[in-house]
Amino acid sequence: LDPDTTDLFYNGYCNSVLWQLFHYIALQQEGTLTETQTVQDQYEAYKRANEEFLKAVMSQYQEGDIVWVHDYHLMLLPALLKEEVPNMKVGWFLHTPFPSSEIFRTLPQRNDILTGVLRADLVGFHTYDYARHFVSSCCRILGLEGTLDGIENAHMGTLTRVAVFPIGIDPEKWINELDTPGVQAKVLEMRRQFSGRKVLLGVDRLDMVKGIPQKLLAFEKFLEENPDWRNHVLLVQIAIPSRKDVLEYQKLTSVVHEMVGRINGRFGSLTQNPIHFLDCSLDFHNLCALYAVTDVLVVSSLRDGMNLVSYEFVACQSKDFPGVLVLSEFAGAAQSLGAGAILSNPYNVNELSSAIAYALKMGDSERQQRHRQNFMHVKVHTAQAWGETFI
Image (cartoon, rainbow, N blue to C red; front, side):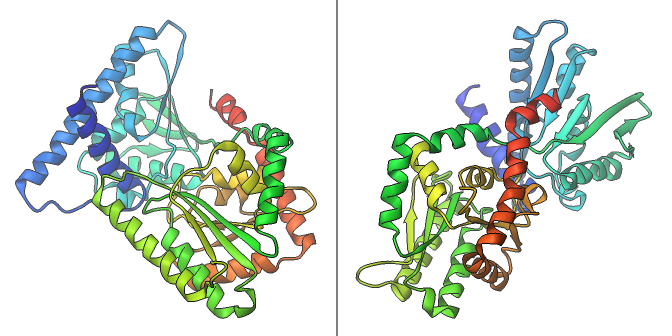
């Protein structure tokens, strides 16, 4: 793709329109005709990019191949592929949430986008909610009929199957890594470093939908209401920088840094602070060790397609002394790991703070029972199983 198309397609229509809408961030109201034209230019680039992907697929395609299209970047591609080869087997999977039809119907190009996806033979989502929203959008916007199997287009005589395929991880990769001498040494080093303190952990992209400010406020409230814990708990927040050239993300970074400084200034001392905040990602070995020494993982996403950090954390816990998962009910993983996690509404700071307190004070028996439920799910519903089931 040429640079202009890439910018308008990826930074423009994909990330500024579709990604935001799919995460329940309302489309910005255009104030001038120039802004309206910009959105139209972005959509034209989106179409060109999908056509380029069509050419790339057709250069490799052989009769009988299955073509699996992924994510919101390529929602026009299934229709383009079917126009080229009508009997081609095409699947499409969405890795983000799919929003309520009330949100989706605000998209100016809604008909084209839905029609593009519906030419696929199989359409997949992480959760039943996302699938239900998609079917509802097709019925309300296109006037099609939803069935138990998917979407029926009587005019064209086609049925698009719609189904749920919760993605997973490769748990053995994490479990095996824990047994290596290098990671074991890191675990011992971290346990010495965090000695005498319970460890809360957050691992998120520094993104508006990840709920980092809500997590910090909830932790501040916990410290305020539980003075006895102030010297005995630590929040380690890994915040991986994201889209640093976008103004909204720069503002979010400033807000988060200010909150960390305020909380550390309020509850810290000369020798220790309650929050360790890192503006970077960790390598696989260090992350594996950090998961292993964590007492409570806090996932406070405001919207999240799945959230596989929670899966990685579960895979790295010991059977006898497992950590606890505090999980946002707005993450797709809540429908998979909800039985063993403490579910919380991150918009309710009091509720999230109480969930943190409950997790920190939880007894061994309950922690083990919750972990068993989650570990079984993570072990069975792997990335490999997800892919094989879809195909």
